Image (cartoon, rainbow, N blue to C red; front, side, top):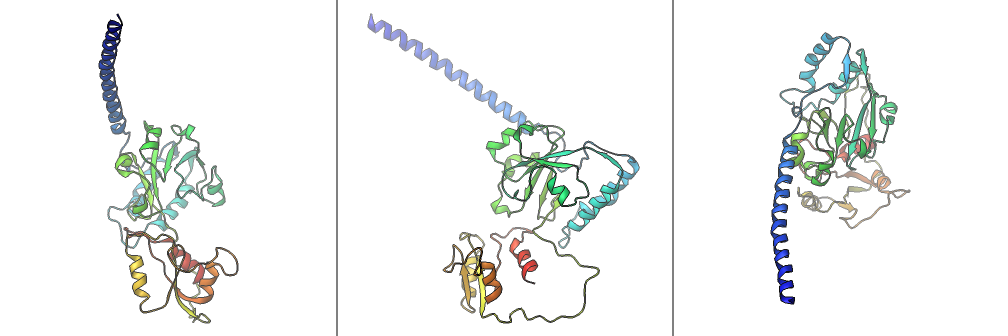
Length: 316
């Protein structure tokens, strides 16, 4: 009797397991089909310039605006010496002067990287005296399908699904401040969803940079001679914390040290300095050193380290 009962339990278990495999298989197929549909169901064309929810009162003026500005701001051939930043700033001034019925645009920050100076709300647009201030920043994921744009600095498979399916009205904007080596956006996964790019690349939809040098029209052109090495007793300093760069900058610095004194501060060197105080890294550089090194952490097209601009704005 006990053997019969065990046999019955065994047969029931085998039957359940057999049907469970079929159910799991069907669910897997349905999941794959759903993901396939979501992935390829993309509204609009990547890179398409769309003026959503805004009405220019004179349609002829809007057409003229697009025709005149398009070749300067989004040229077919990207110039090696023109990052288009000044052209885009002038365009915004002119665009803001047009009579228009603008509505508030909401922008969702996606990721944590490089958003330190972008607080929630309209603050950055108002305090920065942006020509167009009808924009508001949010980090509320609840609004992800209602906002007008996603400003993306980080996106992987795990948070990508959170924003699908992509609403037809929504722009996805990929923001890149760091070099492509340190990119945190899985472009192979979300590339087809991206409408605009914002980066240091000259072929980006919108150009950004750590800094910008521009010719001044009212500058003082009188000749001045300045001895920046006066009173300085040391030659070259290098502050570095990333010890695993792949562009051989360490090898270059050590080779340079064979011919001139090079002091290396930070995690990768033998010297240390404080972040603040009289003997801070900044003060030591200014007081003692004639030169200091600034290398990119990787060699990527159009990428220039922020240290170059910090040096120019601070010491020259």
